[in-house]
Image (cartoon, rainbow, N blue to C red; front, side):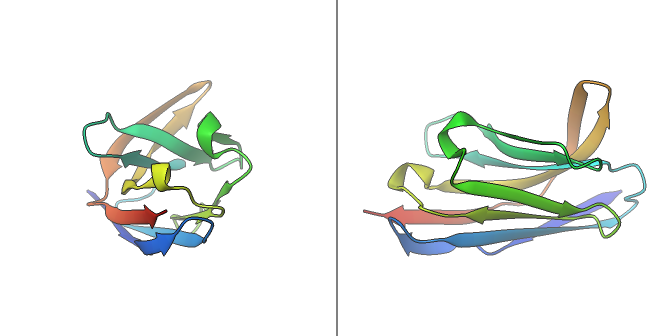
Amino acid sequence: QVQLVESGGGLVQAGDSLRLSCSASGRTSSINAMAWYRQAPGKRRELVAGITSGGSTNYVDSVKGRFTISGDNAKKTVALQMNSLKPEDTAVYYCAAGTHYGTSTTYNTWGRGTQVTVSS
């Protein structure tokens, strides 16, 4: 079983930066992909950014150029550097872990989430 613990959320003003961190523990040997999702009130959970053990990254269009995902596959950690935050970035951010094979990635473990609130 894998456990994910997130940290780094908070309340900031528009234009500020935040860094989220996540660490996996337990049976982590099968993990070769990690990601950040977010869910705003009344909206569906969406993938914000993902990274594989090979270093491939992907981002939702709305955060490209502002957010950067980084990870350490050996330590099973992932971080999300968020710059130029906007009020529409307000959401609960969830760390996810899973497996990447070929062109497919499946996330099957989730953290409890950390709140990010951006005031205008």
